[in-house]
Image 1: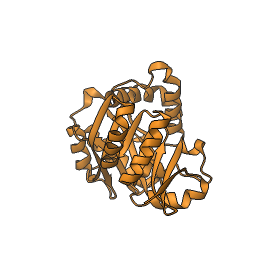
Image 2: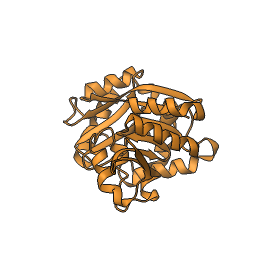
Image 3: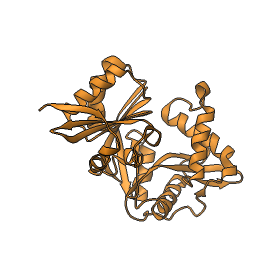
Image 4: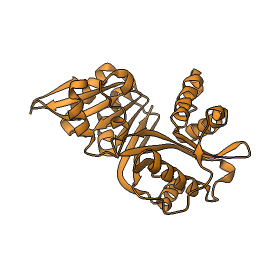
Length: 277
């Protein structure tokens, strides 16, 4: 069946929202960036659409991340061909594992090698109150506490991704992103004796689902249950103030984190994969 690739605009917004609505948890990141009108500023990039018979069948978000949305095998061939010709502009490919790994199969010969491939990441969600008592001290980080948050956030990012977000002159932009999370009340932490001992951020959010990121426990306090009650507090706060479903994704090899999320009441609802450059 012949198809057509287009850059999506505001006139495609209803169709695109219907597409991401097929899996609100998996597509939370993209859905949270859709606004009327659609523009590169609000999107943080572009969305390419694959049409068959005049209908939108698949999409690919292209920004700092490359994220497939309900892509069919035929769509991936054509989307990858277009991406390959433009050259790599993203720092990762992330999303549903089957789609990400197939895109990487198509893009790898031109874009590789990757710095790291994480083929199995648990996409987890909770739509109920946490199953353990939340930490009573979790609260939004205040604007005057950004210098407390910055070292914890840099440590978490470096530990998780393998590179520091402040390398190569990235410190100012990373600090700016943290300041925006603080401004919107989505940077959460437990502060004890002038230091952050637990923190997490609510990154993407729609009226249905929000996605937690950046979960971190001070290394010297790990293994004492702080991560469990801290995450329980994040869930309680997010469900009360942001969205009724709380989601995240975690590497399958991070067994301590998976156990914490399961104790809190998260269940696995899908599988993600990430290619890091």
